[in-house]
Length: 333
Image 1: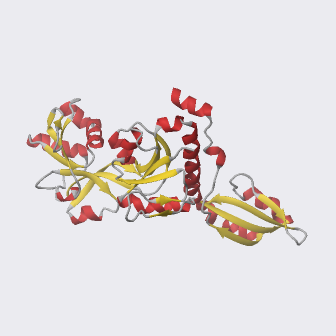
Image 2 (image 1 turned 90 degrees about the vertical axis):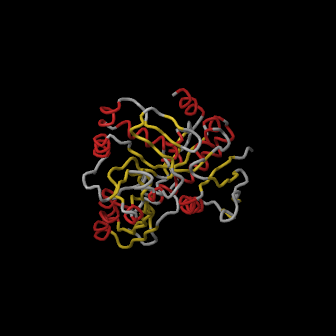
Image 3 (image 1 turned 180 degrees about the vertical axis):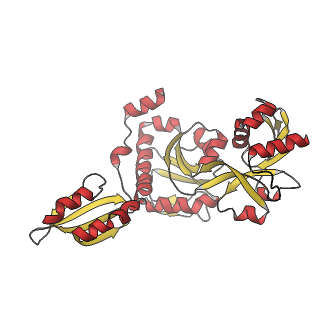
């Protein structure tokens, strides 16, 4: 059997990624000190890489699978298949300016301010492509500068036509750049604390990002690799779904059984088993976690006993089954 090369991220995505893989049933060791940690599946080869690089490596076929941020997928403009939103590491990419600029509360305000000054607007960011796309969508930018691309400046190259809006590549500590080295920033914000400490205020959300699972398109066309990829997808999707579900066991008298079943939301159909005492049944089902408080009064009034578990995984196997016909249809699309 062929080995599937899975890239996992270092940095702030590392710990929640390892936790998810372990919850999916994988045993991983060595990730704290090695870029090649071991995993208890001989068909998976792990590699630790920067999340910024993972979309490119997956797109080029150097890795079959990768876990990265949606922001870095958009920034790389990588041609990959997005298999799953892993629903952790939620962050916002924001536009921020000095707090003292009370007259600037949007990108439009910022563009007008510097246009009226007739001075170039300097924005520091790690996300040149996302920032350029975001700025060019703004109606004030289009009215002032048409379709001209903002200038992008890196240590290796400079490109673009519009000298009035300049994007400066940042290598970290982006929030430290204003006001001397930049007028504004586009950067990741989780709590907003770092912006506050550096006397900045967010004035717009450029995009929201979470961790995602991506795959190389050629790897998905390989029958052996596709099977292993969808094994991994099944287990990870089980964790994502499991975090939103509760597994409940209810003991109910037959006189209340139908009323209970009518009000009980089940994942598919509840399992009903007779108990040793005649006239009593056990009902076993999986429900949405956010509906538990809603149905608790009904359970209290109709049931005798209730046991609640948080499942490690909920595997809806039919939702991740991808046969040859589905792959061919995806290729044609």
